[in-house]
Length: 613
Image 1 (tube, rainbow, N blue to C red):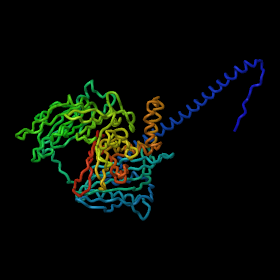
Image 2 (image 1 turned 135 degrees about the vertical axis):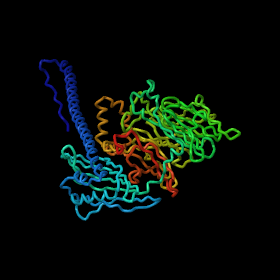
Image 3 (image 1 turned 180 degrees about the horizontal axis):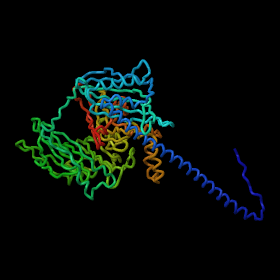
């Protein structure tokens, strides 16, 4: 629609020149006034939006916190076998047609382990009487309940009347009346309404569940009998002024890993414990016991800040060198001198000074001949500098120190080719795995990053790599700790399992919380600096904040290789992401049945009770 332009009447005591000069002035004033009104309106709108997001975030936080307290009472009732306490947490008018008796259906039995799936059935709507019977039936399956917890997976809705619908996982571990070990994981949907400062359950629905029963004696702890008395220690250098983590203090608690290999070529696997305070090498004596030979083989007794160890032959002489990646200081490389004419091992020699192997904030490392020249190269994963930096966000941090690819030049000397190879990777790297996932004859790299996205680098075969994470479907936002390749489904190609964090606070990753990060950037004036991060993130996920939030803290991930360069995420389908903080994972056929099993190491700083995360 065309609008007429109002033209002032001539005259009014002004000359034509004065009129011509005044029109641009009036137009500018009008434009400025209009722009000011737009900014004022935008400011009011932005303030309303910010207030709304902040209010939703606070409501989400308070809801989740109070629900955690409520469900602790629920689990305590189960653990103490107090039916009355559990029933009282349900509303007196409880009637739910979606609830019912919870039955266990036998699925399989192998290696002395029985597996059952949970199903729900009821001929009539659940009533308080049926609820008591349901609870008694659940408790009767346990002779004892040693530990248990409920973890909120998602707050599905918060309603105007204060009621909520949530999805949660109930985990219980104990013994059966037959004194076998019993563990169950049950996913439930709860409908709740506020009751004073707490809640009451109006209805619940069984979504899925699984129970595993076995002897609980598959492995025996022989550490003490084997003579391994190693105890991990924190890096004392982090308490010194030069290295004190002023920004990211939690780094003081970071520990290290373990390497196992036959360093002295006697046919037995030895163990090296990396450590912040006192790394140790234990030699396998061949009779089921080990001895600490750290200083006997020429390794320093006062090594500190060692986060990762590799025992690998780097000079092609048949003996494994010892590479040590460090946080507070340069890395170490010790040449393996092999055996003398009498068959005695001659120890290690420090060749770090001439090796060009970098250092500082190295958290992990992996070795492989990436360019097929017959020499094993090194790829080092580095974290951030905690003296200067914090993770930029809890879900997408890219301010790491930058990884390093070291090309083996021979004679135990290396050249940094990171930039030319295209694998700097600015995440906070905690895990690296080499594998030929696309079966083209060269080694590709999977990088697991903390506080952000992981990366899959395809080897181009010419000394360079391409980040194909998005195209391959392995971006996997979260708290990546480690990655392992193996043929999980026995189809001839390599799949990947990533260890991460499945938090009991997964609910806090709901959309409103992540929107709050964006709003905070606006409020604090850091949006310009943060924009590249958000642009990269939105390019990967779009505006699907809800899904993003749940993905970030959903835990471990299992990706099956489709054989065409892409992967399918089967994590939830395969139930491969139990609650916990999983640092490392290894894949092997532990029961010799031709199928690959997964062992994942779990643990971190916990709360006041062992049942907490």
